[in-house]
Image (cartoon, rainbow, N blue to C red; front, side):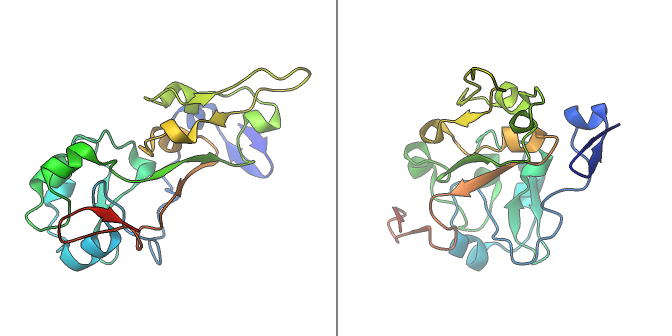
Length: 189
């Protein structure tokens, strides 16, 4: 076991997050699904669980308010669209627009809890990133710390789901409640 600023973790936890999810407390947290906005989820999601069953990554859960949401602590979103295809309600934008739109607008943010920022070599986030947008540029006389290319980040959650110190979060460019689409199903702010 190692101790880092009061947090005890094992080598196993470096590879597998603890079962205690950072998303365990749903109160006040916005529900998020790819290609769906906050009002669409709030007004149209019935909590039927079709998207939960359809998700091959098993990352969609029903929150306390019985609305579907992605739980990145369980893994990453691969944007397969299974959730959208299985949903019997108008929660998601249509397939034609999904092909043209980003599933959501956000990027990974790595805070000071990162092991690398404390001089401990760890590049799990870089290794997990399917877009290869996390780099560790060398630093003369110091430890390499991660840099996220925010413009290339898809906010899939791959890095977040594997970080042993839970130092990664998604910073959303548009608050989910404010991300909406017109009757023509075009995103607006």
